[in-house]
Length: 69
View 1 (tube, helix red, strand yellow):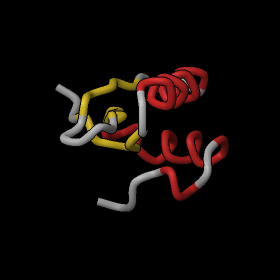
View 2 (cartoon, rainbow, N blue to C red):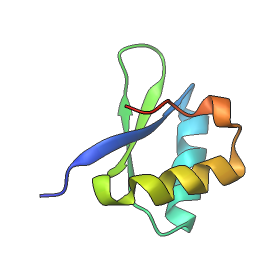
View 3 (cartoon, one colour):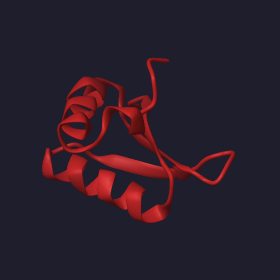
């Protein structure tokens, strides 16, 4: 079983779905999960973490992404 890791946190559903669409376009499967606060976490397979970060960074502001674990 592949381990899922958090690649980003979205402020709302629309932002999370946009991130998921960006990742899908890059050929990366992403899952959304409600976080402890109002945000949604975006998860990818551990092996896709670096390409996922690169895809999101190319199309979003770097401050929108979470820091290194």
